[in-house]
Image 1 (cartoon, rainbow, N blue to C red):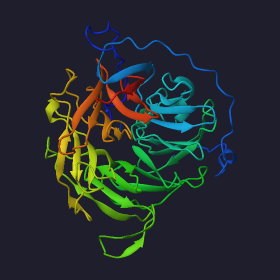
Image 2: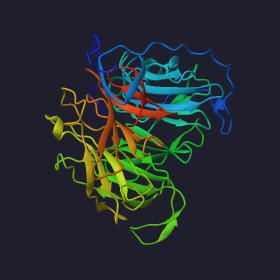
Image 3: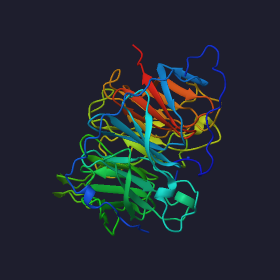
Image 4: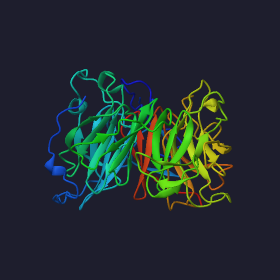
Amino acid sequence: MTPAPGAVPRYPVRQPVAGLPRRALLGTVLLVAVLLLSPGLRPPAPASPPPAPTPPPPNLPVEAQNVTWLARVAGPAIAGLAFLRYPHEDVMFGDGPGGLLAWSLANPAYPVPIGVLTPADLALPGDRPGAPFWEGEHLQVDQARHLLVLARDRAALGGTGRTGIYVVDARDPRHLRLLGFHAVPAGHTTQCLQGCRFLWTVGSNTGVWVTDLSDPSAPRTISTPIGTGVVHDVDVDAAGVAWASGAGGVRGYWTSGSHRDPTTGATRAATPADPVPYAGGAYVSPNNPRDTFAHDSWRPLRSIGGLPAGTVIFVADEDFAPACRDNGQLLALSLAGATGDARLPVVGSWGPTGSPGQQPSDTCSAHWFEPLPGVGDGAILVEAFYAQGTRFIDVADPRHPVQVGYFAPLGGEAAAPAYHDGLIYAAEYSGGVDVLRFSPPA
């Protein structure tokens, strides 16, 4: 979630700060190229791209700790990132007000732009000409079929109120092909389930809308939503539990297999359209008891901090306040005993107030985050905190999370970090993507 659409500031071009290392987004058109996306068809092997040059490191004012700034990819504001693998290269995709963009990672430290679908390409009849796309958080990819799925929010392209999903053929990332738009009664974010054969799309006050994407040329949305209240995002953990985060807290659901339904006591089959509740509930935000908004979540399955395996879930509690200390934080919640719809205790929390690298801005809310598997002690998260930049947080003791690194371009605004093959790609609302290497402290 970002500020209202419009002009987005770019980083200030100032001289590097002496003594420092270099361093707010809420109809159907004709479908084309149907046969090109038949299920099971694999992408053609493109010619091997030429080696990408390696530029000198960026030279902009930044504060950082335990982070090497490898490159800054100039461009419009980026709200979300995702990756697809191809025979000769990986490709990074990002979306935001400028539409959908693709970069070759032939040199992973230096993404090179290779493809784009502009806002005009995504426009529907009645959209305002020249208006930006809005916003594309939580971009989804189908690796097997090389598809991209973008959510369209009601504020997109002039705010006509039309919501749904776009399906894009990315078999040739240098020639992205829009297959079509499918109307859904929500569209802030969407999440793939079961290999992207199903989608859970959210962002309305009616809950989760389920779409069958088995045939990308003809998506089908079930007419009745899963009534979970206002949901912002869905994340799937390593056990296959889908966690719906939003104004009412965070709740997990089985979408496959046979499981005991805690609401009835009976064991039944779970499907994306008829999931079985697993655990979760509401929580009280420690910084603002009157407002709870779980932005996104992650549940590790292993024991962490000596707590029973699978009983801790981390959420970004998005909230804005006049003072940085009162903004939403990263929260660790206990799921112990929460087999139904329970009040989840807050085990621990972390925010940037008082931490090294705190910036002179009160736009400090927690935002998108993800774990860094295999990095350091295996319990480090990377998270965007808007004007406080990208933060690296060790949650090995979830009762007392600790910052172990940060990257904060002066005057910038972080949107969402993405971890891919050892590097962090930090999408910036202030424009472009920063390529980072994190070195955990010994």
